Length: 337
Image 1 (spheres, helix red, strand yellow):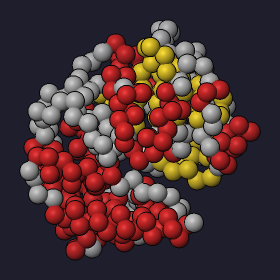
Image 2: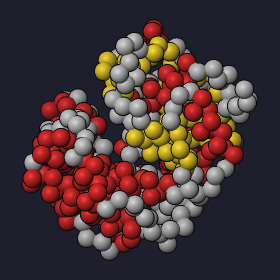
Image 3: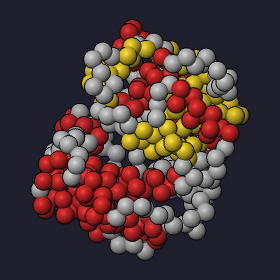
Image 4: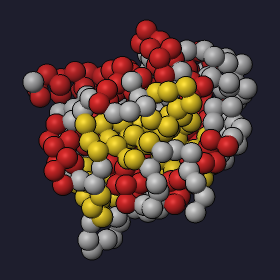
């Protein structure tokens, strides 16, 4: 077997997607030390019994043991860090992530929506190295993690934490990796190989920003609308008024993406057609709402509106949804105490 350059791998944020990847890596034949940073009852369950991962349609869970902590300072410097945190959680995690880094550490960030590093080495938009304060308050991510370390990741994998230490996958999904520069580097090839050997389906993209926007067409619409209505994706698409609103948001997202130089292969009509094939899925934002957690609003909706202003693209439906879901989030957090 080819030797991997990654001897220490940490998954920072071992929730649904992070926990699934951690379990697969820890169960593979990779000669690497796998660790996770988690918290609360989930952390305690991982410490005592590992992660129980239910693959789609599996009769038995995969059970994987690994080092687990809530203090990244307890771990040695890592060769590879994979973050499973949502975009609105990253800023608070910067000090912990920074403790894991050495000069050559690469950081794969699995994120929905527009990421904080988006404009680093961007040759498409005319806004190279532009920093978005709403995604990176005080510039801590840019300064302490650094966009040069980052490899972007777009996930098409339904997953949910169904209990402490227990993750269930809804499908046999895949992940898209991409360097911000678009290059196919030795690092990204090595990372893809490590994950593929662990049973994670991986592809490498030379235009990761196109992949980010392609997924965001759905997320920017379905996530907030599902939170506002508490409806499953199938229910949204079966409602003529709501499905029309989904199409309007998708059109706005596509227009902003194209104004920034991205190319989205599918039309809005084609995306709507595919969305009608999706079953009774509960979006991640609806899951967080029902659990009393803060909602992932800015990366999915807020940045569409702000980048619309940057590029001169009107986003009236997204702006309305942003105002509504922001107030919903405030009220939900107050009710949760």
